[in-house]
Length: 274
Ligand code: ADP
Ligand code: MG
Image (cartoon, rainbow, N blue to C red; front, side, top):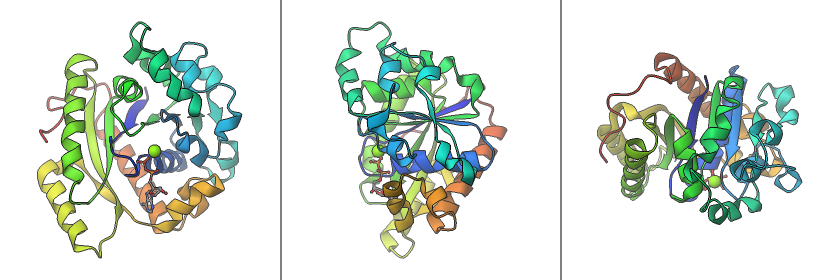
């Protein structure tokens, strides 16, 4: 069965989409079968994976409203095949912003994505869900579908403040809606080791969250920021760039963790207190 992870942080611009796209490509590169789900109406993950969001026939919107199955709506990143980094995408575009309202009257509105993904889970080793920067009904659908949450964060002074809200939400979802949900880990991104404050915050995060902090650190690297304008994940656009190498190392770390902790096993300590 697939390991289903949300990439979430209610702050915008912290690297969620960059992480989702590059981890998807990195996991594909190390031989994993990947489905990337874009749950953000901005559709940046869709575009970053080389799929034109304006050309989508069906999208995650149709899946959430029950007009299409995942098998009907997913597309393959054909142009990444040459690099060995291809994966499937359940894309999003502006239409998805309407779902927030249209889902409200529907039964089990927070479980729509979970039910849809169950039909394709056997096709994948990993399903990665890019969440919007809010704790909305869309994000809730992501959290209810997932076994765990990966939280990208910058090592900045206020980083830990926002984290408390997210950990609280994860706990609530774990208690009331999805007993499988765990905080998988915090990923330090856009890291610049020359900045003393970033080193200090990085240390604080490690002291506070222990083994919930991934070993891999993603450096600030302009090649990762340039890649989306070419419709490619950084990992494919410039495989030798520091940021790309870090994302492949992160993919390897994820695979190693997944092998040591089978998805089905419930965790005794789902998450630390923030
Ligand atoms: P979010 O999805 O959380 O809003 P993004 O992944 O879109 O965040 O990243 C925000 C901005 O930061 C984008 O312009 C992206 O290209 C840039 N960015 C993300 N990660 C890095 C990195 N490691 N190095 C340099 N720029 C980055
Ligand atoms: Mg984003």
